[in-house]
Amino acid sequence: MHLLGAGEGRMLPTSAQHPVTPPWRMIAITVHPASSEERSVEEPSPERRSRPAVELSAVTKRFGVVTALDDVSLAIERGEIFGVLGESGAGKSTLLELLGCLDHPTDGTVVVDGVDPSTLSARKLNRLRHRIGTVFQGFNLLGNRTVRDNIELPLTIQRRRDPEFVESLLGFVGLEHRADHHPAQLSGGEKQRVAIARALATRPTVLLCDEPTSALDTHTTADILRLLENARDEFGATIVIVTHELDVVKTVCRRAAVFERGRLREILEVTSGRGGSVGTYLEHARRALQE
Amino acid sequence: MSAIRDVFVDYGDKIAQALIETGYMVVIAIIAAVLLGLPLGTLIYLTRRGGPLEHRVVWALADLYVTIVRSFPFLLFVVFMIPVTRFVFGTTFGTTAASFPLAFVAVAIYARLVEQILLEIPSGILKAARSMGASVWQTVTKFLYVEARSGLVYALTSATISFVSYSTVLGVVGGGGVGDFALRYGYQEYKFALMYVTIVLIIVCVLLLQMTGHLVSRALDKR
Image 1 (cartoon, rainbow over the protein chains, first blue to last red):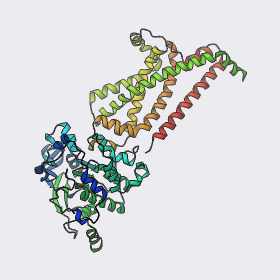
Image 2: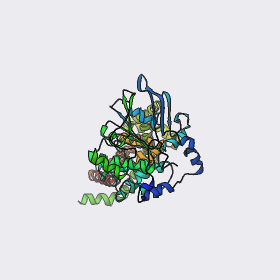
Image 3: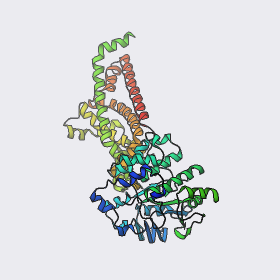
Image 4: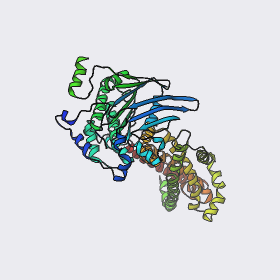
């Protein structure tokens, strides 16, 4: 799998830039418990891997007489953190449904991780869904499961086990000491951390974030955004953040699509004085001190 | 006090026998509720409009069953079911045969409660299940029942208490039980001490059931 996948759109920090390789990263690179049969379905061929993580061409989605998405074309590069902006009713939720392979477009094609989900059998479609992680505004954690069980849940759904990776994810989101707590005992920021760890548990190619910070305060928002950046850097995930908060996009995205009433109005390049690479301590310092 | 003691001296065996009969009928009702009512309520929830398995015909049939059985006055339902009971058991008399109509009602009562509990689970849980690519079976067992478990136990507790109450009617078809006992040996023979003692026994049983259900349900709820 391509945990540190080739990031055409973006310079990824190589491990040389990190003086110490964090333990979760070592595990993330070394453990691939996919069976050979699964691998043939799941592992993208080099050709597939060279394509953008997400491609929409002339996508239209209608519900009865309502056109939720109207002729949208869009490509999101691997390793990119891409923003989707719009007010309510702009078509953001529909876009997420399509990207999550939970629905098919009325017209046009969606290609996720090099595959058109509308051509797949139900079984393979489910496999594709397993390569997509979702983080929700309301966290959507199971209150009756512990933090660890919540993170393990997507693996359980796929009848897989990967306890070491789950442990490393707990470390990645800084909640080792909370592993046996229940969500009710956590703060909002901690809950979203659990949700992010849960979304990463299946090592997704694409991480969809539906208003991930709208329920959080400013300080916690900054925390969660940093965590998402780290997730991109450590796991090579392509991240799509759907939000109405401009600050969120400005902080982590290089590009953002602005939607209005189902139409993609423009893809904006975010200019924030940041260079091509993000995520190093120097970059954070520059951003904090010089902006 | 001596009247109460006499009741136990004279009727202790009969009271014990009646309690066992009630317990037998209620246990059968509980088994029916869990094995059939729980899946039926879940089916109504899943096939509802906008549900994960939306299906109008299945939903309408399942919902109709629950509504009809629940709207029957129970005594009339027992009488109404006599031909079916006779067909299945060859007799309409006795504790087992009497449990048969009670089981039907138990399924309907618990199915409705299960549906209501599942409807109260936040829709985000379903969304999470869908986004993880969970099958319907996984959605039910790994998400819905996990989140609903304390509610399901609590509902089963109140359903059980209703079953105790319903079972008292089953004397008319020879089901026996404490209700029948209190009526026949107490009320009809003017032994009011006996009747009141039996009623108190029923109340104690119900209190114990309620307490157990409450404790179990609370222990299961981590939300």
